[in-house]
Image (cartoon, rainbow, N blue to C red):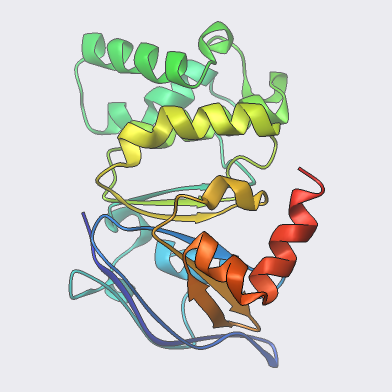
Length: 236
């Protein structure tokens, strides 16, 4: 598990600060959700944590260790973004196995883990296909299956289930519940119903946290979260 701390983080693109004096502490094993309108800084914040963007100013630490000194591959976190980031020349099976082969795991154990992950994500019948032969929802499930087998201490899910229908998304979160139980998890979801069980929900406004609380606490405040939840519920 990992304790994550953002300390006065800024991120500037051209003349605009997308993330502006952002500070947040996420405790070991905590499940938090980030919500807010498009362009408010959620994904940029997660990309900085993952090492895909560098802050203009500020510090990001995990268990007191400065992450900005570590390459993305050394940060012991797994991320699933809306864009999948799959290897197009590899089959579904080979995509899932990729990180396991890097870890030099024995072939019989790799086969066993692929079987378990593909069954959990309901993609067993597609193992020989290439990503381009899958639907958007199937590609997202493949990306999540690959993440499950990487054994990260921190999990980032940024719109990771956006291509799934509401019922499939619900069953996927149920299937992932044991895997995420003791991991620090940060989620951004299109359907706010997917984040009701988060320990804390943080509402982004113009690169900063405008509101925070549980799902039910924020609904009673009748602020931006309540407005977003009302609007999105009508479309889910």
